[in-house]
Length: 122
Image (cartoon, rainbow, N blue to C red; front, side, top):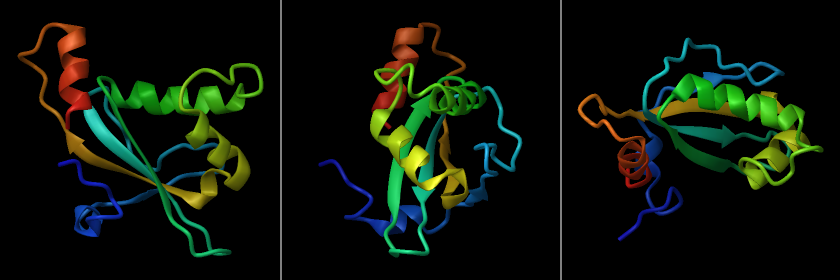
């Protein structure tokens, strides 16, 4: 059975959330390592919270690509994560927080395809 964040908010209780600046930079040093990460949309206006969960073999590189793709969103609308990017464009980076849900050890996995499969099933 697949759990959703709405079904199990205890998944988020022990997470360390990091603020983002207005350009989307996380105020924490990120490494180029495999990880599952989450962005949380916070809104003081409507009290609605939204989440975007992703995974990457190279975390720092993926977070950087999110920033780059949002800047060039009008030109590359079919690239990346369109729903997430529309939310960033609408609410701005300052209304989001960032956290790493899990660092994943893939040292003994040699195939990039196998690494992706492992991350997708986390």
